[in-house]
Image (cartoon, rainbow, N blue to C red):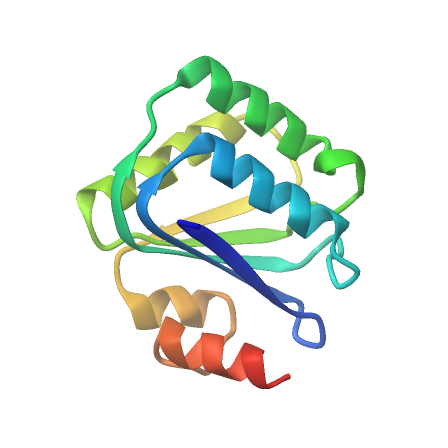
Length: 141
């Protein structure tokens, strides 16, 4: 699947990784799985690794439906406090900007869109220098 997640509940971090075509159906399915996961909790920092995104699905009505359900917490109060988008390429940046625009004017969520990997991790307070290192740390817990 082109999107996956891992949760480090102790640190309050969710690592979300996309690859290839970022489709809305897969995104909706995976975030629904996250919302029902026993380690999911409100206030977690979502680290979005978009470095391997090559294309973004362009279905605005479906995207807005997804964002409305995400804003409601997929039926469980699991709103992140911060979403950090690591987006070093144009499709990744396009995806991050779509999300940012959909949250404009809404309270409770801070978004950071960053092109430098180490900087993206530092913004979230991570000591790791790469997403690969972060994923390894999360997998070991």
